[in-house]
Length: 244
Image (cartoon, rainbow, N blue to C red):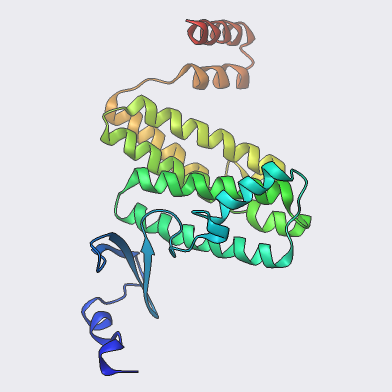
């Protein structure tokens, strides 16, 4: 290897920080944007669209795109070992890029990559070769939902839409609760750190923008307190707004 092909200078001028993600946007030789993430053993470089490694599995932009088309052609197909390995690679690549977008506060891109991962998780759940492999991914669904909700809420705040931010958080909390129920972890929901952090973010937004509780929040509280007459009125009001 020639002396000009090593990474010594790059690694020395861009030190690794074990306490936080170290990320930057750079320009490629052809002028396209690239994401770089400093890791303890070097640098990860990722494309900003399509697959982070720039590959086109079976000619499709991502493995998810190819698998979605395959599902249309054969709804009952099942993953084999080679396909499971390739899916794991795509999960990891999108995880790194999602973390990079969050670090750079590029919230729309983080949401996009989170949606990709959630859709790939859905395919894994539907076509998994075994329950154990399914659970390996489902146990991480709450984290992806949490990160997507964070990105969506902060993006809404950037757009001066705090009520939208609260709705995004409420939706994520509901989906996390459903995931925990599917996993048999209902008892852990209320004490979960991710749930607590989302609730804290929601209350912070409410306080900062002086937003009262939503009808959904009021309904949940009324049911919990067994105030069923109030709950019925709140349901009627929610139905009226939906049909308006």
